[in-house]
Amino acid sequence: MSEATREIEALIELMARLPGLGPRSARRAVLHLVKKRGGLMAPLAEAMARVAATARECATCGNIGTADVCDICRDGRRATGEICVVEDVADLWAMERAGVFRGRYHVLGGTLSALDAVGPEELRIPRLVARVGAEGVHEVILALGATVDGQTTAHYIAEALAPTGVTVTTLAQGVPMGGELDWLDDGTITAALRARKAL
Amino acid sequence: MEWRDEGALLSVRRHGETSAIIEVFTAGHGRHAGVVRGGTSRRIAPVLQPGTQLALTWRARLDAHIGAFTVEPLRSRAAAVMADRRALAALGAVTALLSFALPEREPHPALYARTVALLDALGTGADWPADYARWELALLEELGFGLDLGRCAATGSTEDLAYVSPRSGAAVSRGGAGEWADRLLPLPPLLLGGPAAPGDVARALTTTGHFLDRWLVPALGERPLPAARGRLVAALAS
Image 1 (cartoon, rainbow over the protein chains, first blue to last red):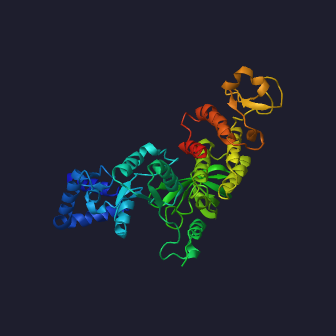
Image 2 (cartoon, rainbow over the protein chains, first blue to last red; image 1 turned 30 degrees about the vertical axis):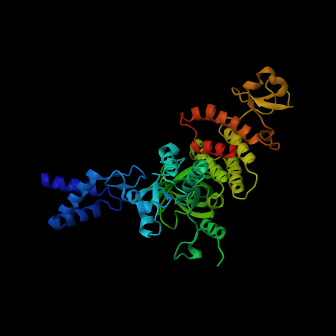
Image 3 (cartoon, rainbow over the protein chains, first blue to last red; image 1 turned 90 degrees about the horizontal axis):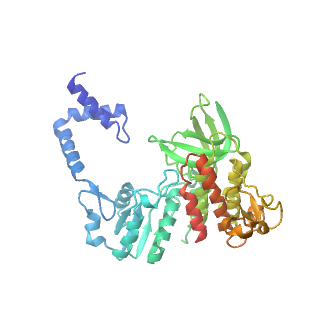
């Protein structure tokens, strides 16, 4: 194998480690990039190098950005006194896509998990408690998964925040948009029925 | 190889991008792991929550292989306890302790029956904390660390048993304890099948926790007890 082929093979191997890509799809992607070297591959490589050099976790909320404090935490208009607690940056991005929450976030970096031996000290819970006091927060919204680990974490946080007197709320659980009852699991139906509201 | 059984889900771990490896506790096959293809899909993932009662079919080419499960939900328990901090902590403690302590593929039908009854009680609002303490006692016994609570180790009496020796796990009567009483562990009546007075569950969990720590943990290679048990003890105390 020539040196050039080895380098391309190494690139394919790296690409195949990305989520959603396997060896065959990585090969197709690399071939596409090589064919569009000037228009796509070079700018992509430059963008990746820039982000690799500058990406870091926000020191305040744990979001990913390219500065020590992320855009959301720097934005004074988002100091609404509400903090939305999410498990992961992907959940923060999902909330931002919806565009309905205008407060700030706090990324835990996981949930309490017996299986993976993740305890409170591995999450950013002490930092959240400190923020509630320091930022004049009046409501903490727990936007964690409707899973055993997610809700165990939610109860733990609610207890940790109890001495601060802040209002702690959680997202509603029930029938998703476009959902049909026939396709729902009985746990979701139970939660939806318990959270029913008057029309 | 193929078998069908029913069991309670203990744990779920993502496997690749679309599958999951689950651990279940069944009557006939004990704690058993297997792959669920498509286990992270939107249809199946909500079903695969710890505590869920599943109808299971396990298939593998050889018995030694991890094999693959096809699962069908029978009863979801997580949704019924999610709003109740204590019940949710108990569900986490039961599933974590079983996953931690049970040997793989070794049936424990009596413990299975107690576990299913306890998990069912968690979602009904029943007075389950005393049952949970008795369940820990049964777990110890099933794994070969049973306490000898039938008679006093000092006097042989079967009356007024109030303590447990932290070394031998044998019951000690109030009269037999004498000046050693403050060095012994409490033996509340609920661990002898009696009713639970206020504070008895905490006392019972102190005793069972001692033997889980001193006997079970060293036998399993010194991994610490799952933190989920500690969270339950804290939740019941608050």
